[in-house]
Length: 145
Image (cartoon, rainbow, N blue to C red; front, side, top):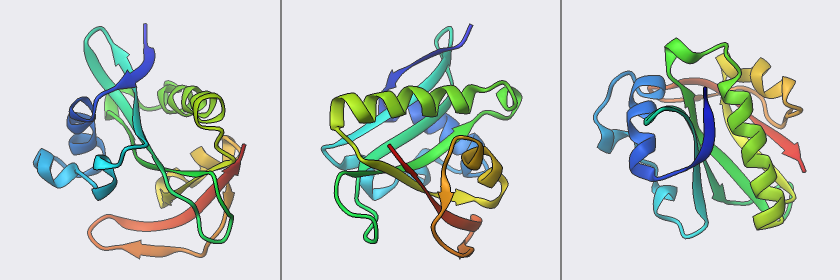
């Protein structure tokens, strides 16, 4: 049984390393926003093991206005992909964004392999493709809440 709950930054790092950073050390899996005051992390958990994560940062998308949050570092361990873990994490997070933060929208830099995932959740494309060095092709996507 997979539980979805808030987790700590430390708990996100193993998943970030494996799912997003090709096994890089945990210090290479941090982003500057991790130290922000209005950050929260959500995880999919089996027993005591975090199997998927997403982090949310109070950060506006310049062209869209105030009360925005950026979704970053969304990943699911390979052996749990295709089991709706990511969908459950995002849906749980959206409820928190609306109720606890009065967020108006959430946006992300989606990897090319995740375009369909975000589109099925209602996200729309907001940019052309661009490359993030060492990571790959992305597009900015946004979901109005």
